[in-house]
Amino acid sequence: MTHSPATPGDPGGARSGGVHTPLGGAGGSGSLRRSLATALLADADRLTDRAVDDIRTHSGTYASDTPVTREDLWEICRDNLLRALEDFGGLAPTGGDFERAARETGRRRAEQGVPLDAVLQAYRRGGRVLWQVMSEHLRGRPGREGDDRDLELDVASGVWETIDRYSVAMADAYRIAQLELQSRQDTRRAALFEALLDGRADDPAVAGAAAAALGVPALDRYVVVVAAQDPAAPPDLAPALEARGMWSFWRPRSGRYAGIVRLPPRTTPTARTAAGPGGAHPALRTLLAALRDRTGATCGVSPEFERLSHAGRALRLAEQTLRALPAGGGEAALFDDRLAEVLLSGRADLAERLVTVYLGPVLATGGERTALLTTLRVWLDQGCSASRAAEQLYCHRNTVLNRIGRIAELTGRSSESGVDRLGWALALRALPYTGLTPDATGSGPTAGPTAGSTAGEGGTDGT
Image (cartoon, rainbow, N blue to C red; front, side, top):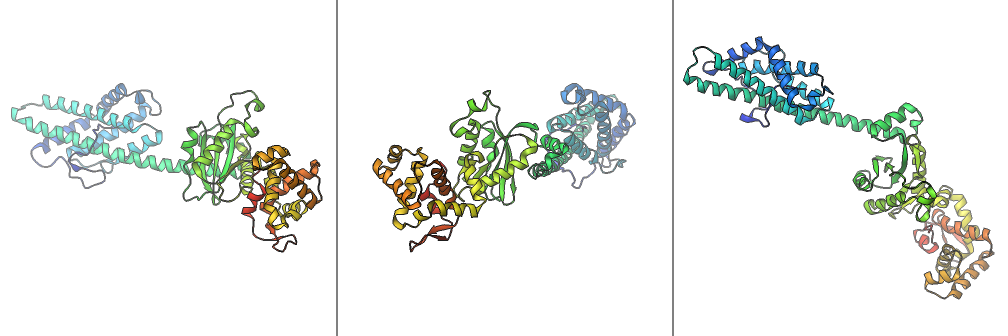
């Protein structure tokens, strides 16, 4: 959208949309302004050509013909010049209110993505051409007297006041249109993001539109993250992840905070060589660290996937991971690292049966249970090595062996059996999802509140 000249500011306090007193008042410079305006209006096409050529000469944006063609520039420039001359000369408007053209210029150029600075520069160049042509008329008018200098200065002041006011009107309209465009773009991005997470991206058109709106490729390295965070005060994760080479897009969703994260490219040829501790790629470990450090919220992270259209399936896995984590613990975990917990957290009946069959008698021991459950967890985590478990527990190796023997005796299981060891490990992980607590009478497990403290005793942190 282009224009008539403009200089920044609002001299004289004139404002777009406010009450405007025509500059071409009766007497004095008023008649001179009217005569100048009338003369230039009669040759408006040539004046427009001159302004357009000047603007294109001094602006690479307009000279490129993209996105503003010469024809587009010419039409809007002519409209602006006509309105400005009518306004300057105190003439009746022929195209609606005087500043309509300026507002239309701002709106169109914002929609075309032309930088505001380039549009303002075009207004200044157009204003300069307008004043040059007026100066030529003033110098050539017959009977010009020396005392006409004050009149000419008043005319110059009027020209630049008009240009400044039109620039302000254009810039205001540009900014409003830009905000409206941003709002529409944000709404569209949010809607397509929801479509991805709802599983509607199996339609290639939806997947393509979502990728374009989000500005990412349809095929790349992605994960979905779900955080148990207050949607009214979400963490500002995008900048923190971007600093680590990861694009992300986040929205409140169903009382939680969901995001798609684009991981950086692999620098190694195979997943096996790229994997770090725990089997996850280093980028995933970096993501987990950022989530823990920046949110304080409990977060579930889906497995990595390549097609953006698979985000809906990944969301379900991330939500299952989140449900498997202790509420309010501030933990961030990968789905693949919590497979057992994910399975057990969704089957309370199975979790309860596992605990009853493999740990029921241990839970009923009263004062012994804390030491027995803690020792069992550490012993299993240390590869069933009594020596390494003793180092972790700061006790003698024989103490560990005695406690594991006691558990085997109570449960009727064998510490040498792989099946029984697996049962004990699953039961420890199942304990937080059962609602079982030791019976005070020592008769066995009974229904009770979920044991947040038992998780510490039983070592159900999965490590």
